[in-house]
Every structure is written in C-alpha cells, then in structure tokens.
Image 1 (cartoon, rainbow, N blue to C red):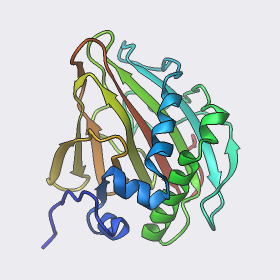
Image 2: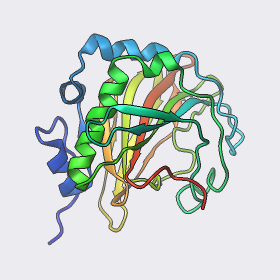
Image 3: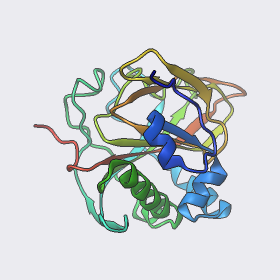
Image 4: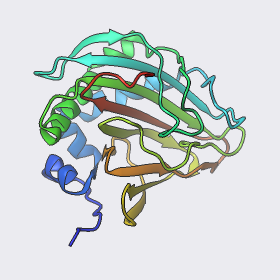
Length: 246
C-alpha cells in the first residue's frame, strides 16, 4: 500500500525522507547544519531583500511582489558556483498558466548578495543533497529572491495557484516574515489525494520538493499590524540544462 505523505521537520536524514515521500521540511538548525552556516551568517543575508525592484510581469494587476533572479551553473563535482549565466526566466504554460509561455526578464541578483558566504554554501549543500536523491548531478540552478508585501492589502506568494515548476527539485527557504497573517504552505501529491498544510514561520525553515512528485502553493498574505512582508529564497535545480523555450 502506498504510504501517505508525512510532514517531517528537522529530519536527521533529509535525503532519505525526500526520496521516500517527495518532500521534506527542515527547521533552521537542520538547514544551517547541512550548509555549514552559523546563525549570524544566515541572518546577514536578509539585508539583500531590502532592495528588490517590483516584479514587472504580474498579470493579475497586483503590485505586491518584488524580486531578483540569477541563473547559475554549478561544478557538478562539488556544487560550487562555476558560472553565472545571464538569461531570462521561462516556464511553459503547462506549469504556470498565469505567467508561463513568455520570457520574463528580472533584475539580476546583486553580486555582493551572491558573494554573501551563507548563500553559496546553502546552494552547494542542497545541490549535493539533491544529487544524492537523483543519483546524478543537478548543476543548473535558478535563484529567486522574493518579497511579498501587504502595503496595498492582499499579497499573493503564488498567484498561479497550486503548481509544479518544471524542474527536478525546488527549495523554498523563509528569510523572514513580519506583520503578516496567512501564508499557509500547501503540499499535495501530484498523482494522488494526499496533502498537508502548514505555515513556515521560523527564518531558515526550508521546504525541499521533488518537483515531479508533488505540487505546492502558498495562500495569500494579509496585513497584521500595518503593512508587512514575507521574504523567501527560492532555488530550483535541474540536471539537463536550464528550462528554456523549445
């Protein structure tokens, strides 16, 4: 009998859990241990979310999302950043009915942010973990900095709804959240009825997904005390090149 989805927090063997159930949720301490990063180094990354330009491609008429983007090719042997590739972000309509089917050009992630010690350490450690799960290197990485704010009311982390990203693996890492309500994360089997709902509230919490096996979404944010925001680092990994138009 197929095992139902399980929510695992702070698992001692995240690669095994990811293989077994298609996703794993790590607490901050487990992520930092995995990456070899201390808490002050992780906290230092947050300042790079204060200078994100507005997303110019939102098709729902909103003005609640700011972001930057980078495409990286990693050394397949050790996961170190080997090259930054300047290219637009693209997804097929099959995976993103709202924003798919056209090339989206975003402001580049600042060089100093990519040089922040914690960021490449996290990317490299997750590349090694995902390679262990896949049985081969996954060296093509897209890096997304997101800020969803509630200055004008409702902010939508996933305006496209429940979705897959068209990649091999996804990591969603909470950088910080302030003065917002909502933002419940939902993970469902792509080919089944099982699903779970939870709220990522601890900076450093990391949701790791096998993109072929699960779909995910995050519910809208509402202001709590005045305007607030939710900052995330989203990393997508592919083995066979970047996701580009055919």
